[in-house]
Image (cartoon, rainbow, N blue to C red; front, side, top):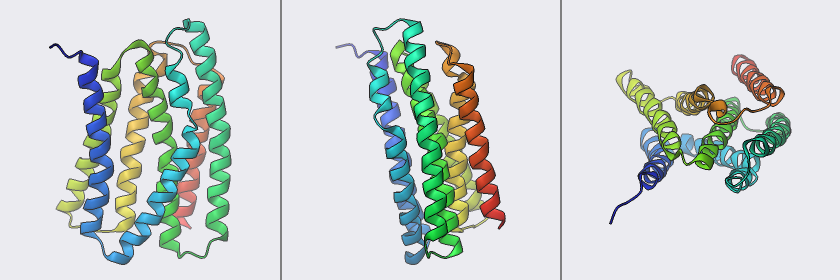
Length: 221
């Protein structure tokens, strides 16, 4: 029985995603104290909730566009990006408000901020890669997750070489891996098969610059 190539790509994508999430949790649990792992867990849960809110079913809805024309696909995806941009601004506002009103210490707030912001480019990266399934380019998704996993492993190896167990550094590693994932996706570009409206893509890039500014501001305060 011959297995189609796309199923190999789907299997690789699933395995890498599961590996990243499970490996990171167990690895950090082994390297840090119980108290620090509790802080990481809070930040990781908040990050997951932000991703859940930002996804909002867009990935599944996009897969239903396979029978549409390129013009219709472009219009639908552009509208989804615009909607995700609005949701992202609301989530950033809620995140900053939560950190301002909460009574966590500085390190906990910084952890929540880093992982919370990292979920935003990760969500957009997943959305863009998911759309390659519309044209049966499942290999693009697999490569994207491999890039994210490779960056994660390299950063963790560097931390091991320097014998660093800082919780903030682990959060920055996740931030870097997810950002690299997003940069890779925007580099191969959704425009590989369709043209996203420039104003929506400008909104996405501008918002990402805003959250990088917020990250820098809170990290240096």
